View 1 (cartoon, rainbow, N blue to C red):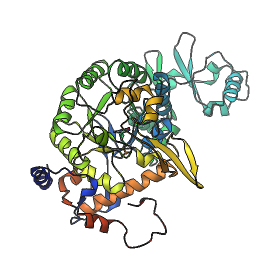
View 2: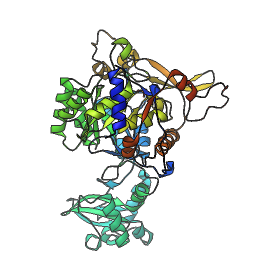
View 3: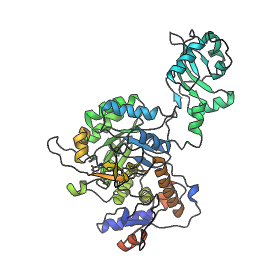
View 4: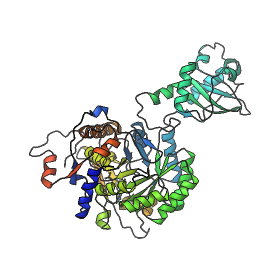
Length: 498
Ligand code: XMP
């Protein structure tokens, strides 16, 4: 609860005024919190944590596997767009899930009767970098492990694997549901580099020390699932199409389904949430978009684990102009977050973010995460086509409701609920400057978020939500906020002008 913020928005509401990012700024508060000491951990949904509160948009010029990998490596998450066939989208999700091997559920195994030379020749031919192989009989029984250590001390290549391996009886093993942390502790305790998980006589996966170290070392602000694999979400849409996608995505370990529609407060969306939750109770479902408290609450009641807020604030959106609807984004996020208080369902502020200061404002008024399109579309990882204009590199960034996206993706037609015969676009095609790697861009946003938290004296996002106080900006105030009365000669990496 933040009574100051409630009072502020109540006053605006009484005046019939809804606000967006440029309409407000945050007050600086007394603070003993240094930006470096802040922790922007958050949640995407009821069961999906984030180490960094940023989500990449489910758009065909923003998120495929490369973006999603970089997002999850930084602690956020990417939502794969659905302008791809069902199979291709599942392949992209699998690419993210296989990128880091926490638990290797289905490791490459060798037979006890193969010779060591044959195993090494196969390794060479296939280009495998690892040298640890579980040994499994033709009947599927796990009988031992052969590792780099064994290979190093073998002089006769004709020796059989069964005579060179460490037999099961002498191995340290663990039960199937062993977590990454438990496996790491076992490795330390027994000085073992590989921990096989054993289910009766069967192998249920292996943990390998080198992989665990990579995941658990500081590189790892990584957003990973309980098996140490990067998390990923995927847009599924509504109805039968959503069920088809969900079936394939669930097979490859997709962590969250996103029911991405332009109008989330509708019966089709509610019934799709219910069906997905019934079929896949262990996979979270986030759904949207809405811009009213009532709509957010209805989605939560239908079973959504996270609610996307934003109708028309996006940089490439024309919904408000074409359809005349939508609520300025800061008020929409506040209203929805207020309506969802006590439900445990997080709000994702989707669209309209133009710089890191806007992210701090969205998080202050109740968002648990922000979804970004434009701010990530210029990165190396984004799938948009690159164009050279007057010697400067740009990438294409387009609305999923733009004519071009609709002509290419049948799923866009469904999202914007237009008939295949009459295209009424709700978005535009644009170019955005090329920005370099996603990591470099996210580092700037992370810095901005931490600085904002420092000014407010909030070490966590919970504290930020409790302490934040807003005031209205005037046009003159906004003008003063940007660089003014100078000719900018060097643009910093975190500012692109007014
Ligand atoms: P930003 O401002 O980050 O917004 O570029 C990204 C969000 O915009 C939404 N989106 C659209 N909205 N017409 C719309 O009205 C469109 O064509 C369109 N395409 C994307 C979407 O919610 C995305 O996350």
